[in-house]
Length: 101
Image 1 (cartoon, rainbow, N blue to C red):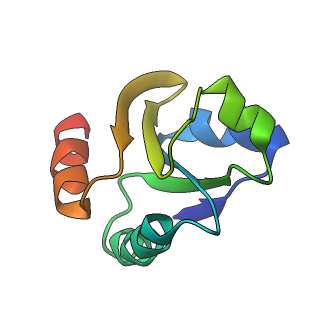
Image 2 (cartoon, rainbow, N blue to C red):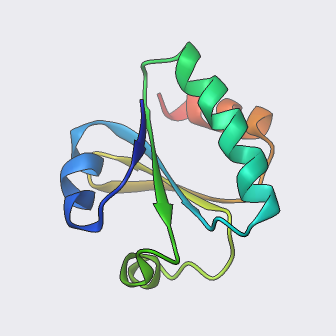
C-alpha cells in the first residue's frame, strides 16, 4: 500500500508492519522518478507498505531522522530501524528489501 503520511500518525503507520519510509520533496527530480517506480512496486506486493513523507510539509519529522538529502528511504519493521537507503535504483532496493522480508 502507498501511504501519504500525516505527521501525527507516523508511529501508528510504521508500527503496523514492514514499511519503507520515503522522505522526498516535490521539487526533487529523482524523487519524482522513484515515485513512479514505487507505484509499480506496491501493485505487485502486499509484503510491505511504502510511506511517503514530504520534507517541506513535515520538516520536524525530517529533522527527527536527520534527513539531509532526498530521496532518503528508511526501512522499519515495527518501530525498529532496519535499513537506511539514499537514492538507489528500485532493483537494488527490492533486492535488499526481499532480504529483510
